Image (cartoon, rainbow, N blue to C red; front, side, top):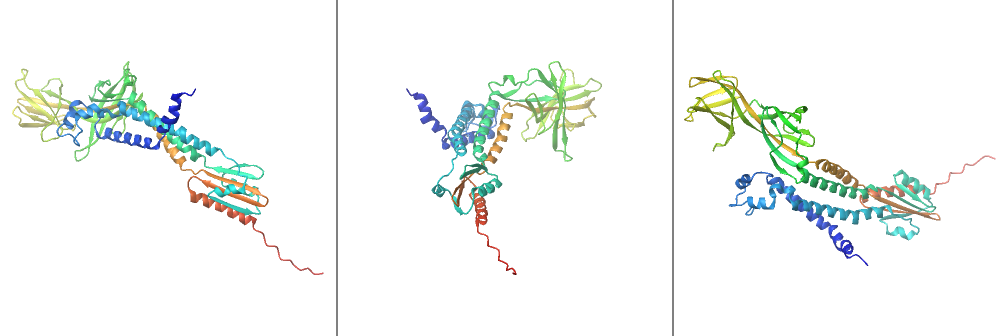
Length: 453
């Protein structure tokens, strides 16, 4: 009794999955949602989306923060529907590979000798060469790097079988890429940390993580920010950020150290730390001969724009009097404002200024490094898939050429076909035919020379 489920799979579902139109539609959908994940910021806070994607007026008339959160557009690559698209596209590729590519390869590897001259008439290029042998054609085809199969009076030659294998390699590579993307989405995580110089931190501020990411989050090692600094151009603009980082194991031993900057991250046990942002964490000052006081600073958002960090520092124990310290960068200059908001002094790092009968010395402006921390275990699979994809594409451009030959009495029948590069194949076959005809042409007899009796 036939299995109805198997019959449905083979007759209905498998042809649908292998349909090229379905594969193109899925690929376009994946591309569109991937673009949306690039355009719409991923993993931000609720307040960020409410501020940048308000309901009135909604972007494009419909795209508001509610739509983004409900549809999961704030974490596109980990939504169930995006992963379902990847899985469905992978199923379509697999079905196409087994229903079309493998049969095409099998047909290319199967062959038979042509035993009748009329069989050559269906070939795109064929000819009859009188007074020529099969052995001569065999030698010429071998010189063109054909693989030969021969009986007593028939010959089959082929080359470029890699052109039939190429599409299979392309499909396999795309399946590997999809598997890597799915694995990375399920097991990876993304975090951000803002850490002052000299402090040790563990990865805690995780913005986005897959359901199986717990094993990737560091638990037995931490990172110390030895120093953070900025190189400035002569014009005063930022040239490059640097963070000197040290990885510490659970016992506090140093296991890896590296100075990172933009496009030069630190990698340790599958986790990558990128230099992404910066800020001012605190200002260290002295009042007269007091110990060094470290006063935290916070980022200000003035109406006219710009980046500023500020703090209020008391000048009396009862906090009845104080000044405001403002810093704009890490070049070591701090602006001092009185309680009425008037600029009273400017002090540079390593110098002092008198304020209300007190000597305020600026010891250091403490910077904080902004780090993006990412783990994506699927990246090796994705890179492997892209490497195979390039190889498969190159293989797919190889022409699969076939040549048949048959010798009957004194006539040699020769013909062939190819799946691409038709002009090149015709030139090659015409060259072989030309050599065969030249070899078969009768040679003129030598003139007789009279002899003396």
